[in-house]
Figure (cartoon, rainbow, N blue to C red):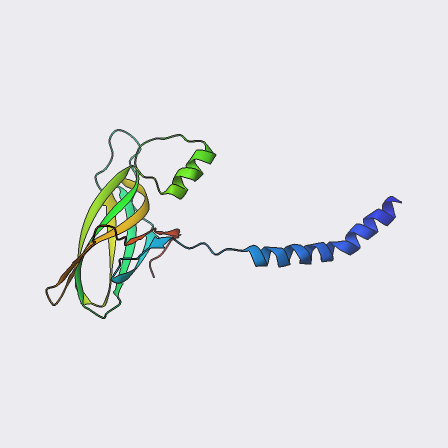
Length: 177
């Protein structure tokens, strides 16, 4: 009897496996950073980049510690971008303890505890990029585009009630190439 049950389960295994695979393919959701770009004149992309720097683990904190990001801005109207200002919100280098449920809820709400404003200058271009260091931020949660300057002298600033925000790509680049 046990032999018959074992043979039956082995013969049905491919059917159940294929049913699970079909179900998984239908429910798979790609992981992409969220964005709210209703008021953006540019498309935004932010990728995390690794750092080869060593971290000091004893007294004090080096001044150059922070989240490293690769930001790309591409103008939708083919205007030449020369400067941008972003506000990066994320977690500070402070010890914390949270239970998993509240941490998940807070991360979905986009909570953070520090904001840093970064100004970047570029050689004029319709698509520009910069590697930035966000000091004092261990994990960036969101990036808000605050202002843009164009080669023709015009400027764009985020209007009240509009949003131009992205989250960094959850995958970290090992090599920027």
